[in-house]
Length: 205
Image 1 (cartoon, rainbow, N blue to C red):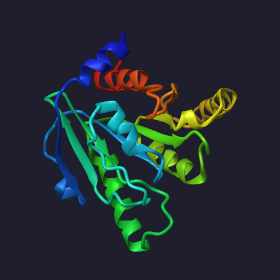
Image 2 (tube, one colour; image 1 turned 30 degrees about the vertical axis):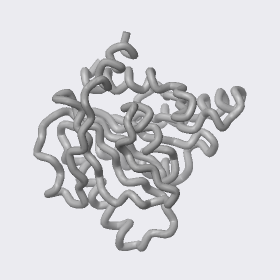
Image 3 (cartoon, rainbow, N blue to C red; image 1 turned 180 degrees about the horizontal axis):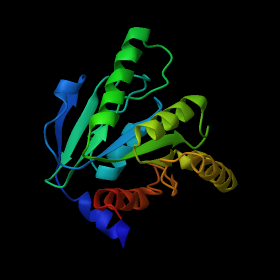
């Protein structure tokens, strides 16, 4: 049922609202929001594009290229928020600090934020930098759900193994939603389930 409702959500017209690089630039629109976060090169842009069926998020081969929080409006229903990737190695320290501060402000002060979808590369599982973000979300009291990406790069047995390991890790975090979603942007795996999860987050069910 939720997958059907989720699919309906993404029939709304998608429009780029704005990119924000500081708190004052965040949209004043009070539509509910769901945000996507993940390490650089986790496949976030590809997953967002697969969700919407439109090339709205710019994929880059250069980790850390997205420097703003980007807001996309889906009709009058909700906003999809594309957060800057984290964990990149080559960006200046000052830039990393600025991005971190901006993300903290967004997570702590954005009351219309319903859930963060935390993307984890299925080939690597949860790394130390992901664990740090999970702890930050726990402390901020922000509900988040883990989404494993690039599942098509793994054999079925390996998919099952990383899924079970991720479920176990999620149980150690108070703000982590218990259901993990395994996805592949290329194959369309898990896209209906993710759309359904977004519907649930928006409706509070």
